[in-house]
Image (cartoon, rainbow, N blue to C red):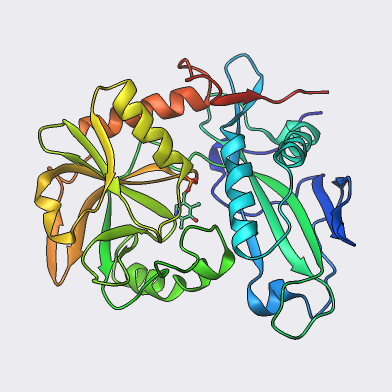
Length: 342
Ligand SMILES: *Cc1c(COP(=O)(O)O)cnc(C)c1O
C-alpha cells in the first residue's frame, strides 16, 4: 500500500494512523496488550490522570534508512525513563520488553507511514501511561492504561538548522529540585505553558529556566536540554541539576562530543552569568535534535553566541547524530535497533 502524504510538507501535527497499541493494568498485573484501531479513549471521569496528573509519557522516533529498513534510536532508554517516571508517580511500570515490543508493533503495523529516507521526516511515537478508573480521593489509581500512538512528522528544519533566540523565565520555575523535574510527566508541561506563552509573545522561541532555589544556574529550555561549547571548542558543557529531564539526545551528544570529536564533555552547574565562556549553545531533544541558540536575553540584556549563526561544532554534532539516526553513520554499539517488518 502507498499512502498519499506530501512528506515534505509535514510539520509536527497530529494525524490518526490505522493502528496503535494498548495495554491495561487491572487486578495487580499488566495484560498482554495488543494493537487496536481508533484514537479515542473512554475513561472514567474519576481517573487520577485527569484530576491529579498521574500520567507520564515518552517521545521517540522511527527512522527510514537508505536501504528502506526502519530503525529506532536508543528505545531502551525511553523504556527505562518511562519506568522511572512511573515509579515517581506510583504507577506500575511496564517491563522494558513489553515497551519495546509495543513500539515495534506500532511501527511495523504503520510502516507505510514511516516517511521515505531523504525527506528528513520520521514516524513520531508517543507512549502514554495513565492512571484510570473510578476514584476521587488523592491516591494512586488502581487501574492503568498504556498506549503508544504514532504519526509522521516533518523534518524539524527543512533547510538546515535555524538559530533561535531564547529568554530566561526569571519569574517562573518549571520544576522543583525534589519534585518531578526528572520525570517526563504531563504536569511539568502544564507548569511551563505560561512562561512559554510569554516568551513566544515577546518574539522568543521559548523560555529558559533557572534553578528553582537560587535562580542562578541554567536548568533547561521548557522541552529541551541546554548545552554550551566553550569558545576554544574544547569543552561541551550541559547543566547538572536534580530538576531537569534527562534527555536522551543530550546523553547521546555528550558521548559523541567526547568519543568522536575529542571534547571534554561534562555535566556541571552553569551559572547564567557565565555565558561569555561559550562560543556556541544549543537546545536538544528528540523533536528538533538541536536548536542552535542565537542569543539568550536575561535581565534585559541580550547575550549572543558567536555571530548568532550555527556554530561549527554544533553543526558537526547535528550531522553526526542525525547520520546515526538515519543509518548513514556507524552507530555506537546498541544505539540503533532495527524494526522487524512483516
Ligand atoms: C522529553 C524532554 C526533553 C528531551 O528529551 P529527549 O529524550 O532528548 O527527547 C527535554 N526536556 C524535557 C522537559 C522533556 O520533557
